[in-house]
Length: 204
Image (cartoon, rainbow, N blue to C red; front, top):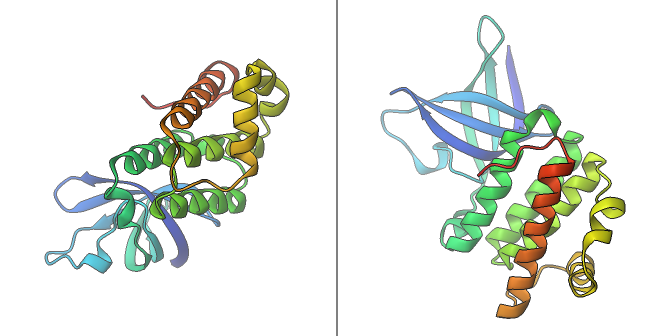
């Protein structure tokens, strides 16, 4: 039986000599794993790339435990992310967090929307440290963790003021060096809180 899904590509890795292993996010299935056979003559539009949005036709194995990509139709490629080291590093941190915590993620429609907004912001060249911080904060809220009640009071006044500004305003194209370092420290502080106060796995 064939299934159709609109997906975001979170991770790709080789699986043997003939297949690609794809970690995908869709509204229907949340975060899931499938396999795609490598074509002998690869075409750019049919070869999955990190952070793609694509329309897939999937087929289940006879045992029903694995799905295989029968057709891959590229909808949007975000190659701009890979052209900026900092954007790529922060986007990969977000996608690695999602893949590592697939079973803990919130309701799929909200997660898909949050992830797509983040990837679009990374691709548009928005300050990556801001995009990552806002995404983590919103993800924790959607997951139901008491980030506002428990984490927020642990920030000192200057960081709290900056964090409030970051969450209220759209991510800028860039920040001054001092503001960038402040945002990175706030995000690291939030990540530490996540490590000790949630069930989420933080990839190294």
